[in-house]
Length: 305
Length: 242
Image (cartoon, rainbow over all chains, first blue to last red):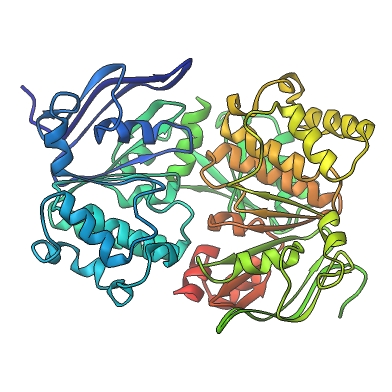
């Protein structure tokens, strides 16, 4: 037998009428690991999470959480898991304190008993404990939702897109909280459409159209990028994009922040040629250099393969 | 300072809700054909300002003109001159692609003939003519976003407001979407856009960063990066909003 993983997913498949939401999904999450499921809307992230949290039954395959089957052992799983769904999880017409009490009560515990677990996070919103959850800002709602998911001392935490629609600063704060929780030994499964959050995970699965593109450590995914990746700079990016697309032997030319990324047939085209071509086209301060791919570059490459 | 190239003009725009000042003396001008990025933390006051610029809400004080119309007295004219698209609500799921175009075209008072022309033209540009009769519900998200953008410009507005248009969209579609933005701006349409993707801030001609109701920065991405001595807009943003 293999080492028991905290989460084991095998050949998972789920269809909604004629639409295959997920297919051939296989992955394991080890105890204490921070595992990220990364992909755009509609990739199947929520479907996987809803099966793992026992809210949805798969058509094929199996999923085991802490040794319990999601279908047969759903009662056990519900007790040991903390779940923060993508949209709704709080009662907006109850106060901050009432929400937290509610979640503690349905799991048969009290706020006092597990206060130490949520202290760091909850203290930030405690000054507003009598405010209705509906009147909190986005960042505060997120902190309350996380506190509610943690109050029954789960050993596994499942977070469905906790940072979607959240600004760049609040996103960073949220990840700091997750990393602290991981240090306490909680196994964390998190999904996100933001590619730049991949590097904060121990391992990630990149997912698109219901299928896993790859599963690995973030730095390993970057190492597996099959080609050299080049980055071009010029004063006029839009024009640069158009011109590079005209050039032969260049592939997947796309904008990347203030630069343009591309791959090329290394045997047929030298960067000097491309530079000369661009200068000829009237570009100023042209620069081309090899760069290390980001997870987003890898995702784009895997999508187009 | 203000010339006829200016399409949005806000001078000391203030919006208060009771004691709370959501927008505090915002002053900025947006030029014709400019891609103007409107950034800020959640709750910084972006949506409030955007609603005012769209003619949906009146400022407490300050001078605000959009497409040459006064937002206090000519809100209906403002609404006709602009297009609007948001991530959350855009298309009717149980209508077909074509029906959505017809619906929005009708709302903006276009003739049937003009709606047909624009629908054909925009769908051709998207290479999506073959799917005109498909229901929106059956269309992948990436395509929906591109369609929603096309519909937002069906009546050829002078300005189009995009509120987090690319949230949750895959990285390839996100880039195709930005190329549509570039193309639209190159035809002289002003694009006013909010986003949480900081790499997209780099694609804007100029960017404002709001924090707690105030404009903290307003310049080209290059100048902002130089000013804060960092190499990305992400770092500029964190510097300002933290």
